Image (cartoon, rainbow, N blue to C red):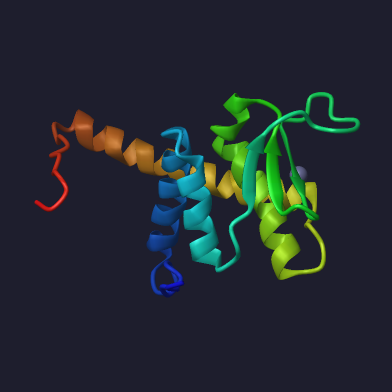
Length: 143
Ligand SMILES: [Zn+2]
């Protein structure tokens, strides 16, 4: 498996671009791809992703992370495409494979918020450019 150097080590903007990209990929319903990007970035193994019935007292819970199964389990399909929920659960995966415990809920929320905020500010920049009359030029692969 190739391991590229972690992005964002040289300039902080690259880290924000990476975070925005991860959120955009999830919003594009490509959560598996987003999780793969995160795992490459943090150099951890890829967790399983599944939609299914949560066990135990899980009323109102969108998703859970199982340390035993190394699996993110979403209660509903819609949560699989919710960047905050998925990145929050990824944080538990990251912490549990790189440390001894899954991290706190507060830390997981903070981690996920950073990604969502990076996406929001990137999206705001794009909107500002569009309003200034700047438009996207699409390029086909290989152009
Ligand atoms: Zn949590």
